[in-house]
Length: 199
Image 1 (cartoon, helix red, strand yellow):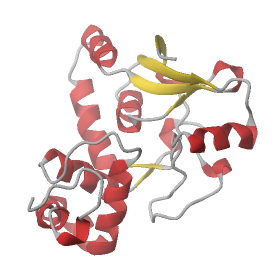
Image 2: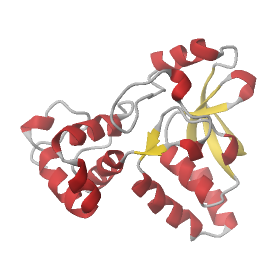
Image 3: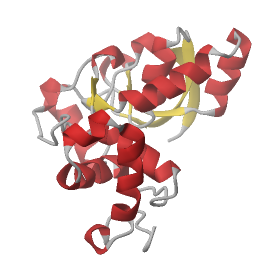
Image 4: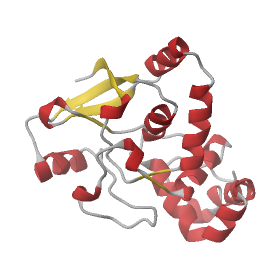
């Protein structure tokens, strides 16, 4: 099942607890610089995968950064690829079905797993994980390959969380990206999704 539909950004429900706000702010800046018609065309060209939940509500399974950025930039609506219809499920049954498909990531900014009820109802409630931003910027810099593996950037975020001190990442993000690049291509990272030897 995959159908494209348009829906208001503010009605989207996340399936994770965190985003990298540095990445969100970059996307927001890009969207805010566009005219309304250009914003709509950009969103149409970048459809967000989603699942139908109880009451026909949309739960997005990827591109949370784009969704949050669009919300903050005042973009009214986006376009969504509906991957599955779980509208007959509610509560934990819905979340268990999502988990079986690897469409939910209830881990916080410290890499700690929480119960499904802790997943926020709205995009503006997602909290910042600076390591998720770091993972995105390292991938963009060629540190590892984009991969269809579910939540691959979060796997990398946890890898960097274990290997780079938080204080250093917060103090100088650009320097942290430079420090993370050789780490991404090292033997420590072998087996990680999208690993590239000697990055």
